[in-house]
Image (spheres, rainbow, N blue to C red):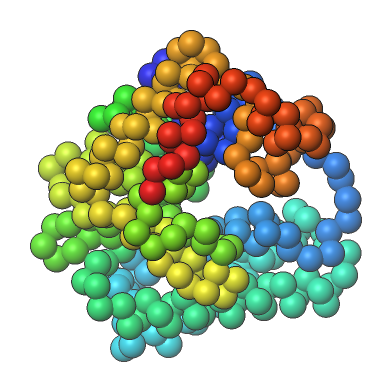
Length: 309
């Protein structure tokens, strides 16, 4: 497991289906790009646009000493948001060349409405956490848009994983605690009280552990997923970085490490995992039925991983 680095997204594929993990994370296969006319922002493009706007906006607000966002400075911050979004949307327009101008504008306006609501909620946040680092990356050598404190090397976690990735936001409390936030632009399927959601939601815990490695002198409070759009209802799911979270991270690492070490990475999809899988053309449509006929003893570590909260 420690021979190379993995992102949390790559590791999450193991619990969904070990064979998908093999194709995605080890062989790094991806769907072939099929050029087609762009009429509106798809979910991935929308998510990328939101993240790009947030990164540039946070940098401006930090330089102008406008953090944290408050009710007193909200009007000025909203104006800066509109300017940044117009700039980013113009770049996306040049790259994607949308076919229908009216539909494209409606999509950008929907992003604008979501980001304004996100700022409105930030201005009334009384948690005491203040934005501190933005797009903090590690193990992503050559990435251009990133926090100056980023590093090229992956972070070795205490559970044995070499982690690479980019953390959307690290916040710091007045008492020195740090909180890690991964922004989502869709619905959250991560339930309140879950830690790793059966190995399929690893960002909160693994990114929190990464911050422990990057800033060992700081106390890391928690990791969280935050849906910053209306599609996800601006839901917030936090995971305290306590002994239980560390234990769950270790169990995930042990399960994946054992599978890589044997190696044993069969097509064994979780219920419903094939529905949106990019590799259905490889396996066919009936893998969920076939896996039920496979010896369960060999799959026991995987099944136990899926039981984790």
